[in-house]
Length: 154
Length: 139
Image (cartoon, rainbow over all chains, first blue to last red; front, side, top):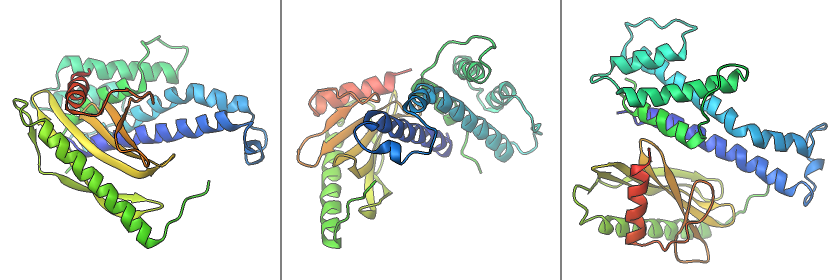
C-alpha cells in the first residue's frame, strides 16, 4: 500500500483549503479593511466571488492531474518495462494500473475513479458529456483509496 | 499579514505545553479503544512540525488499526489563526476527516467537520468511537 501517494493527494487538499480560506477572507473583508488598496488594479469583488464559486472545480481538476501523475509514477517505477505514451489517456492509465495489481483492483473502486475522471472531463470540456457532480472530498476519497492499492514507488 | 513573535523562553513553554496536551490526547484515545475487538495501536510515531512562530518541533502521531480500516490522529499546528491548535483525525486511505480544535483559553477539544461546522458533542470516549465508526464507514 502506498503512503507516499496518499500524501501527494492530501497535499492538494491543503492547497485547496488555503486558497478557499484566502478568497473567503477577501470576500468577507473587502469593505472592512483597505483590501482593495493592496489588490492588483482591475480586480473587483466580483472576480473574487467568481473565483470562490469555481474553486472546487479548479481543485478537482488539479487533484485529478496529481492522480494521473501518481499513475505515471507508479508505472514508471514499479513497471518500467511498460511503455507509456507521452499523450496517454487517463482511462488507459487507470485500467492498466488496476489490472497490473495482484489481485486486480476491484471493479467498484475502479468505476468510482472513472466517475471522477468523467466529472473532471466535464469540468474541462463543459460542452461535453454531462457527468454526475462529485464533491472534492468524495473525489479525494476515491482517488486516495485507489492509490492506496498501489505500492510505494521504489 | 503580521506574524506574532515570541521570545525563546515563551516558545519553549508553548511547545512543551502543546506536547503535553498531545501526549494526553493520545493517551486518552489509546485507553478508549482498549476494549474494542480487533482494534490495535501501532507504536506512536513522531512527526516534525514547522511553524513560523514556534520553529520546528516533534509531535506524536497515533495510528489505530481496526477491522474497518486505519484511523490516524495527527497534530497539524499549535498556532492556527485565532489562537487555536489543530489535530486531524482521519480515516486512511479515504482521508475522510474531522478536526479537533483547542482554543488557547479553553481546556477541551472542539470537533469541527470539514465544512467548518462544530459538532457540539463533548470530546469523550463515546463521541470518539462514534466518529471513528463514521469516518471508517464513509464510502
